[in-house]
Image 1: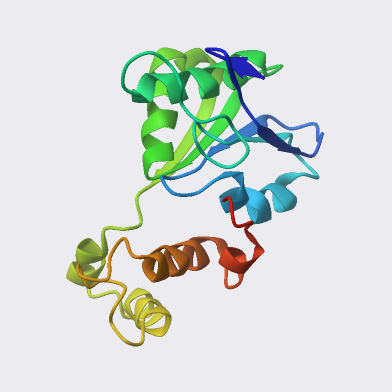
Image 2: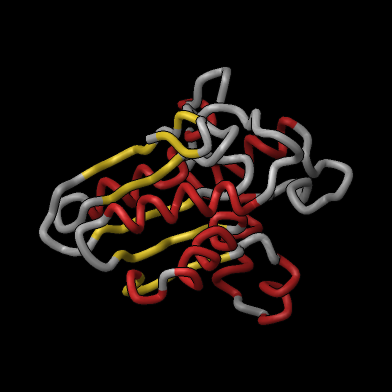
Length: 177
């Protein structure tokens, strides 16, 4: 698919009879973030997962001027408009922002939208949800994941990818990714 003279990679699974599901990844991720969900839905749905600009197998941004979110919105908008009928949009973090932008532009084409921003751990702690707090503690036994000094480091990115995409997801990624 071409958008603004950029070659856009779209991972596709399934050709089921139900509505198309379009999943939009977060910052720092790619279509790989959604591979497990895509496999689970493929029997009933057509699942389309774009790599946004400068991610995964999609071209790096080389347009005029600075990059703006509206360019990623155009990618998802194209997928929505290409679908045979209404779609379900799923977005994580930045992908949720993109999905909401598309849904606002084409509410008649969007049957549902599921967006989540799970990196708000402070909110999680304020709920005193014992099961969720245990999951976080099990994931982060040394407490570094939430340490600002550790945040953004290569080791932090590896933990982030493995947390959301499953243990070993980082190791499955190519060096370029």
